[in-house]
Length: 411
Image (cartoon, rainbow, N blue to C red):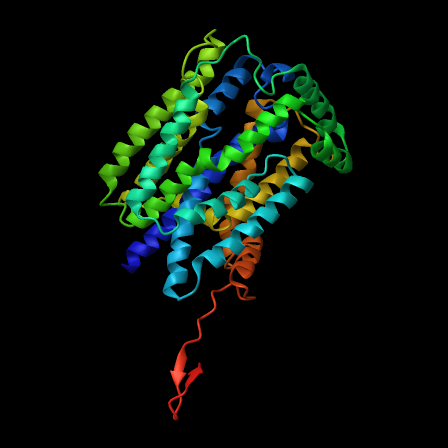
């Protein structure tokens, strides 16, 4: 059992580390073109091979690596809850504190560094997931499938080419062009002011975005719930015994996800804007492909040979929150005006090379860091707050003991 537990922990850390490679690659488009400009290559003069690579990223990477983080978030939530229960501590109380701090870190991240933050969303979603914490695996699967079907159904509704798409307006395009100037050559203060105060949407589009923001935890909830179910079922406890299952799921989910995403990305480029199901790639395809990646990665742990690269993925994963925030600090310095000012200039492929070089540095440095320290600085802060302990460890519950006169005392 101890060996199985060790393998499971290695897999969890390794998958987190691996997912950060895709996350930084997808985020490169926001670092370099902005949250509203990443899907508007024409406004930045992207063409030819760079445009083809841009479409490849939207098919294979964008929207398919952050769901891996969501899956592992749900997985880790259940494992932490079980650990707290074993110590006779209150899981929901500790988890609520953890989610609150994640939300605060996300707010600071979004306000002072970058508009593409995901931590605020994870913090909010965590509170929603507390409703499912003690559900059985069958119930978690039922809710996940139900929500995935509902989300997928929304993507089946064909677009009306005559109806304007929210965010596709002269106002938004003007905002994108302004962002190119501000982010590319502005000072830190100018960029922060633009990010926090400029309005990218018209009033009617802002209402639509607000509604979608309220629904967002429900739209992405299936991946969190499936991660929780995997923890309850022990899906990754014995990779070698599950090798066949991993292979089948990787092929089914990966293939389906790639097809739906490719259809959603390429069909409009070929004049199929009014075809039904174009939204399935965005609504469902990313999560399906993420599941394919998860089970394909699990196959690496199902073999007899252990690759040296896995240990580096695991080191990056142990420092996942610190590494995620470091990616923001480094990449905004590369692309923003107060750094090297490459916003909108480097190109898609060159930008990918730059951010993957950042990730390669994290692969090299993370194991070196862990030789001297047990946990990352941000992870340490999160643990201290979660457990209300300077050591960052769960407090041992004081158990009553009987004194000589028969009265109960706390030990």
